[in-house]
Length: 544
Image 1 (cartoon, helix red, strand yellow):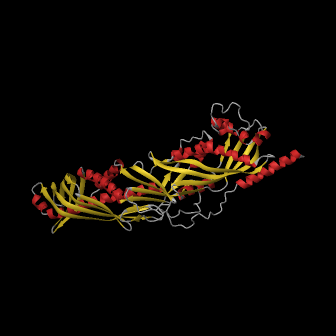
Image 2 (cartoon, rainbow, N blue to C red):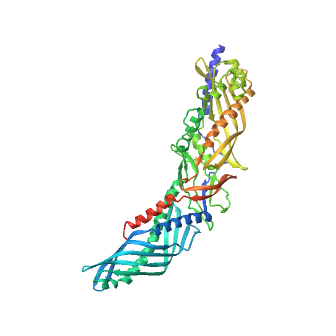
Image 3 (tube, one colour):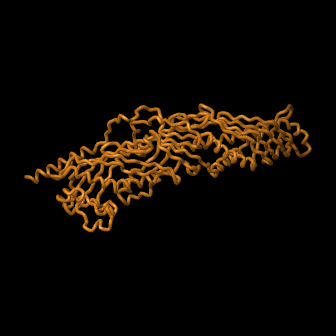
């Protein structure tokens, strides 16, 4: 009778515990921001950073112009009694003097203006004048001097959350322009009469070449860069966790299909001192169907512009990640002898190895039966398992110069009896974890430390168990779970756009509700040089 009653108690206890832990319904947290209107990520390019980008861009532009050849222009010619066309081919730069002054300025509310002043260029090329009656070849050469270019670009966010970049104006002023025709053959005098028209053609077309090339570089490549920033896949950076241990499997599952949804939610903010994107910053999974039921809070960032680049990340980044991980059941963890590293296998045994711990290794000398004697008394010489299930959605926050996270976990303890698992305890653990974020060695990373942990017994199938003894489970978290989970944070992920820019002396700091990275950078020339070259090649493919 007693045994039957005990078995019924175990069944009811098992069903009750599953009911407590199976739900995924969340009650709205009073600390959630439910008002849409603030970004979770902001990327600020300052005037100092823009000047560096401009300097590199102008340098590469000068290189391409100085070696330019193979351009061609054509234009219809018309005079009373004479109709035809003139084609100038193999236009080659003989001499090029770069701009004596260049600048880039932010123009609120949505423009950036690039200026180049006093460019000089000497050109030569072969021409062919054609009419229905005759054809005259020859050579043309001359100079354009004191050319100034002003290019205005507009930035705004599309309905899809992408960044639209449009050159809305490109104007040129030429101080001096003179080209001379040297026609060949007996009809050269007739072609010479078109010299003024040809001068005007070249005077218009060469500046147009500069504008078209700059427009292509900006309008084709800038949106691609912003698109790369709008979605960042994170899971690839955690492939080293191959699932060989329980923590590796947890980290692999936690990061699989993970990405940063960083679409632009508002037009960028442009002041006289900086250009700043306004991005969502929601971390989610490929299979996530719904958005997080809360939004980023206001980030009270300063107007700093001393460094080239500032990255701001709201605590919303981390809380959205935790929400989607919770909803997709990525926060549960099962610890048992079969999946623990050798060093920790003895911990889940109900009876300790008598020789363990004699070599000074404190961890190997611990077992659950030693920490909770009632377990060893009722179930000696067997093994246990611990199933950790999130009791509530963890909450992350930045405050007082550190990142921290509140955790609340339900712990189901099972024991192996005659080859079958029997549930014996339902307990809970709640506490706070401090998370130190770092920006070093080319990546964002972190470290995790359990600051406090309280373990409490809720139900027990073991008669006479001391409720306070369950607190002895805390060493499991502090000596194993904490350090092992920290491995995932330490792995981290690379800085954005590493193939294009190199961060110089990045400085990471924690503020109320957000983290800030302030850095200078060096813009890589290799890829940009290819983009500049490609823009001029595209122009050369067709007459202009």
